[in-house]
Image 1: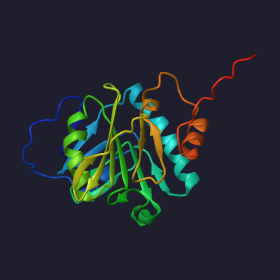
Image 2 (image 1 turned 90 degrees about the horizontal axis):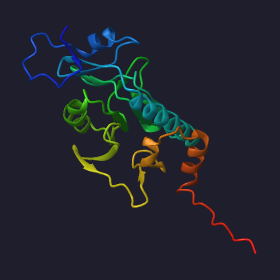
Image 3 (image 1 turned 180 degrees about the vertical axis):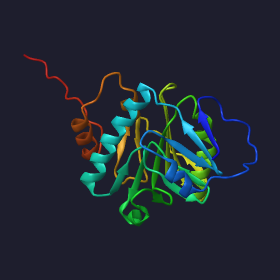
Length: 221
């Protein structure tokens, strides 16, 4: 079985003598293994950094709480495998699957494109997230793609327009508004907050529909 460990840049592409099928990839995965299957090759991912995990935990909690409250669908984390074709499957950091696509969910994998996919970039996965997986997601109909880079403190959001990605602009107030998750918005700065944010208060602010404004102090007379 052909595998590569993503601790350095991706190796130069070469024909795979014995390509791995999705069913073999699925059988090979365990709780301890996180990997992607791309064109019949398994790419193992190195352990995530603390910055990566802080963003992951924040997004998983906020997205899941919002989606459950609004009854929009299902949010899953980084051990969820998605099948795109016989020789292509990934384990994104986060996925959102709308109610309309619930039939894609099988006991051990998702059979087809999720509505929204999040990848939190590590130095070893930057090329694969920005090139290989980005192209795969566009081709197979993922509606929205979030690329978050903890080291560069950047977040980019893309809309799938007939197989091509167009970037969704962040508003002047610093808020991103999702097109795949109805009504969901967030301040990009929340992703890189120095201290953990209160999840309950954050979700309540999102549900309110707009950023909370601080009340002006009335001077005492």
